[in-house]
Length: 426
Image 1 (tube, rainbow, N blue to C red):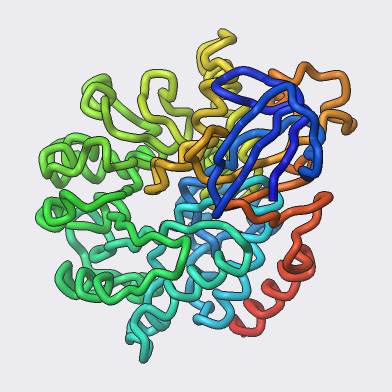
Image 2: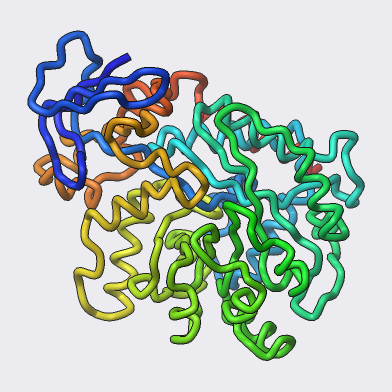
């Protein structure tokens, strides 16, 4: 199927009446100022598919339940662990399918799933040790988006090496070798990649951090909260950034997530390493505002899914810097689009642009909704929300049509998944 965009972002510029020809899931030609002919019309502004670089699918259950009142990341984590304790492969599949369907409707064509919910609640392995990861890959396939399963190493509960406790036992394989053996047995589905992650410097001893060097893509939570920095300093005598630098896991194949509380030396050490910022989660959990403008290789994630809206994440990247500095204009629109379409951060460097040879990922954004009417198309993503997305094409396949998912009723699926989780919890 070929598509015709009334406006499209091509090479950083808005072009009009663009014919986009597609074959075998890839763009073969991009021709501006051309009639639609038999191509399917995409009205509004067409952008490349968006990349959600950091997701914990099971956190979606907490939306609308944990945002009021006081507390911190650590009190929120207690509620999150209640969800983590209840899911099994079947209920996780139902939940993830619904969450990835919501992502598709938000213009996300690929997700990086930071996956550490590996085993049964008591820590025992399922008959298929990768049942939970396979459920996530199957869920993404049903939703029509690509997935990078960032299978996560989680061995300790604190920086001083205490063993996992409570629900954390289902996160752990017990040793690096056992984790690596399980990951090696993972069989990716089509349009899925297997990556790796270290949960954090709290959860992975230094020697095992070093053993992760060379894996790609490789992700790690880094300096999300001040308490993490304080624990690392007390145990290892350095910041989390310095600890991972010493053990060789920084560089272009690595993405650190959050990077909120950094020293000047940390910022310098992260030059050349990707950084995924998750503004809607960081503000919801009162984590703080990081030095995003000083960092390189930026990408975006919806993390805990308090919101699934990459336009909101991109806007917040700029707006949070305005709040922190009392100045405007830290990022250009082009830089915000680049962060929202950074598929390379999750191992898909052939996506993220509308040009020949790239994966055919297209997102059509209405220019006549109550939010976008009258907006300059070049600045529409600063006005639009996920609700303004009308059509989504992933690898040449139409997965959202007239604002609805082509495969299933996503709102109903989310309700049913929440019900299934409650039954599991009971």
